[in-house]
Image (cartoon, rainbow, N blue to C red; front, side, top):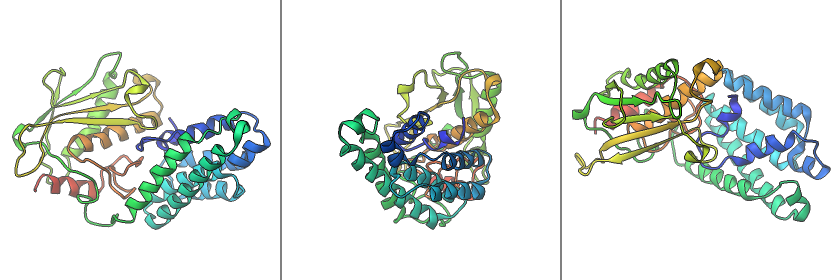
Length: 331
């Protein structure tokens, strides 16, 4: 799974990117070329940026996306929106918060303009697939993101305040019993279960972490259940993972306590022998990120250098991830 998958990771609606990639594969009409900005060289640079993001070369990815943007005319609203959005994520993960905020703002404007073009395009736009639904929704999602970013601090010692509502597990329940599904339909082969176990165990290795896990071999009485979705409809369009929780009836010290958590991790399938290294990295990243939600982190970090950033492709907990966990369980 290339970085195109990470482009679609955590917001609810990212269909516009899949739409643009899919339609660009066919020979475009002049109207579509203006809308998307069909340019083989620009497309090559964007794909290069995706590959660089996959392999952790974030600064080089920023340069490749910039090349793509520079080759697209200003009226290529969909194409510029996609490339600006990709560069925003790369800037965030590279630690360039201000530049990322600017790119998200520009991407928002272009996506909303793309929705207008599609809505006013009449029958020709409809025939070419330029419907405004995904674009308008995505534009609004980005508008909400831009507003949120203006209120948060990506350089604070932790993201306890910025990261949304926080819950916790009672320390009396440690170690938490973790069931990683091994069934053919919704689970993984042994090597992939080991990979997921290593990812979630990272949260126990944080200095001062009170979290402890033990592997459990049945779902019935497990505290944390990790499975693979059996159908695409189980996870919202554009998401790579989803975590839900059941709360205890009684709070502790005014804090909502968790009774059980469940994570769905999308991936190519059961057998790890068919996975590329990028597939494995993506599954590891998803397990690491969703485990943070399972432990009680209700939202996301504003910093792309944290695992709990809403689209981080990184594979290691940051100091801020650890500090946030410690603060959650010391309140």
